[in-house]
Structure formats: C-alpha cells, structure tokens
Length: 217
Image (cartoon, rainbow, N blue to C red):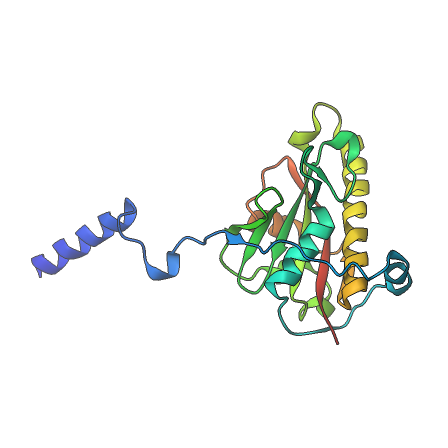
C-alpha cells in the first residue's frame, strides 16, 4: 500500500512540474498554411455581382489551401516591404486580430508567419453565435480589436474605428467567398463574454463581430 501511495505521489509531482504530460493535455502546435494561390481569371466584377449573405451551410471542412487563401484575402500582407494588409486600418494601427474557430479548436491568424497559432484545443463555435443556422459552417471567424495597439484615447472613438476596420476585412471575406462559391454571413450576435474568456482575451481586447464561412447547402 505504501509503495502505491509513493508511486502516486511521485507521478503527481512529475505532472505538476511538467515532466510528464497526459496525452489529452498535449500542447497544440501551430499550423503552417500553404502559400496563397488565386485564379487570376476571376474578375472583381463577378465577385461583386455574386456577393451575398448565406444562412444555410452544408457540413464539411475547408481545405488547407482554401483556408490560406481566405485568411490572406481577409487580412493578409499584400505589401511585404511595408507589412501593409489587404484591408485598411485607421492610422495603419492594424489593431484587428483574426481568430479562427473550427471543430478542432481555436487559433489566431499570424499573417507574417502565414500560420494559425493555437489558442484552445476544443470546439468553441457554439459561443460564436446566438443563432443556430451557423452550426454547420466550417469556421467562424472572430474579429478582435486590440485597443492597446490604438494608443491613448477614449474607448468610444476606438470602438468606432475598430468597427469600421472590421467591416473592411469582412467585405474582403465576402468577396473571396463569392469568387469561390463559399457561403458566409457577418454577425453581431454571439455570447461575447464567454467567447472572450474562451479565447483568453485581455480586458483591452474587444470582440467586434463574427463571420461564419463554409460550404453552401
């Protein structure tokens, strides 16, 4: 009996100091995305013509290439020499962080590294919507404004600017989805406080909007 207790205590100590890690608690790794590739034959006119909100989704995942293209179109770096993006931001503060929630977990898009940085290893998409129609969408994009990047000033003006900047990114997503035959819907309805907690956001990080993207039904 004493031997069993001693072994149990030893294992507990090893877990507590990180020498042993249970299989279910293994750390998530960053996902390197492929380089974005686009069909240059598709016109902006056609994307604008086909742009629409869709509230019906078919279950299914996006391919790694589609995910890479989607995120680059949304908020990627299109001028590597300056680090500027595919969407504008007030005073070029680039205060919006793009979080990607999937069935596998939640990630933050890293445009410089063209990668998904892991945040939490579980499906939290139920927190991204107060409407049931997005449950089959492949991903829910969560737009988060980092007020710390916006300098000094009142929260009111920062909120307005962050909302406008999110809208620019959201429209990029709409146009990409239109060009690729994907479904998307931009929303304000979510379980904001629980979602912020799940994403481990700081108090000066504020969720602005969410946007579901997936296969059309």
